[in-house]
Image 1 (cartoon, each protein chain N blue to C red):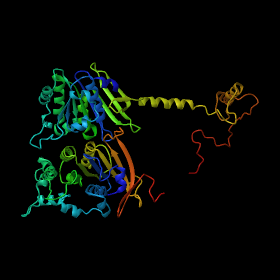
Image 2: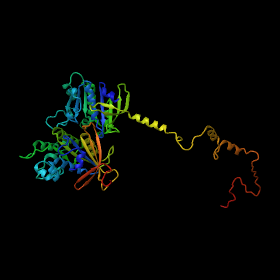
Image 3: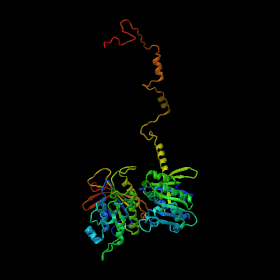
Length: 296
Length: 257
């Protein structure tokens, strides 16, 4: 599913890459930018968190002219006198204007690095409103955002991801180079698909998807089934032949109260001892109170 | 300067990566010995002073080291006296809404004015050392404002001036999700981790106290290295002694071997 998403989000699509302090999602973000540039799309990046050099580092040179970096890194809060793009300019009119200035008639792909920066300064309702307006606006074909899930409360992360058509959560993998991606994709028909994949990067930011973690789970149950014959490879014989098995099943166990024993006790056969009891006058047999003779 | 740590970080005073944002953090431990390392590492001139050690007073006189004593200045803001000659750096205490903009202007003013007297030597790239950021939280600054401050420091010192930034952030509590008293410093630590290119996290040993091993340091490189690995983590144990600190792989302490 990761490869499908890399090949192109549908128009009006909104993809979120969620990461945490233990694994940065920026490499995957760069892979998406790379893929979009290869598809000859114009890519506009609102860069809050990293500088232009750092973002462009490693991306392929030929189609780099289609990448427009809007510098919100040097002065996002307007502390100097000449800010390029501040966080408070993040509204649908501001962004649309920015995109239309530099782009041709084709709608562009908007990349936001990162949504967490904006959410820290502009509240979640305003951010969601702007994102929704941008999606419906038409100036922007698709939006890809990076979100640091451990920087916000769960409610904030949940509400922003609720608006997304696809969410990829990245985490470190078992081996050094690999990472784990949990993907949730919502199609237009309302169907939700989820998947987990292990992937790694090549030098040019292309993604190599490796075996899925669910396959490892299957292998484990197979080995368990193969281990169920303890009677093999012994120096003595624990197996039973057919006649032995029949005799074993016929054997009545000594202390088990089976049907045969019950009938034998209830209907005692001829020749077995019988006990007859006739109380005479000397026996104190009082039916009402058997303890009558006690002096208590 | 700890020679072992320098080799672990693949850096020497003559050649180190520029534009780096180093985060030194600790949890229920004390990572200030690492600040000493970085201070003497960056103040180093040549091989001669290496052997003689670094004199901070001398560096301050020459103008190589500029010191802002935050707590002392904050006291002069909170308890104003007649002879108030403090810089404007700690003005955020008077007006929290302004944020740490004035504090940020301190290093940028130092770098632009160039405290270079006539005939003074040309120093290398600017290095900003902050010891420590968690004090700002206890002074009442919000986590968002501190993260904005560190962002601006990084944008100016690392990207524009190709200098280095080293910041210390401390945590008192256990690492846990959800609400806790120490939420501010946890969020600050996570935010700084996202921003930095190299982290050194100091913790006590998980098994308890030990006379010969004072704790463990986890070094994590977050930026892409030459060989293509995006994140690389290494764990070391350390022991602090009079002349410095020694670092070794876990289990190879001289007390054990």
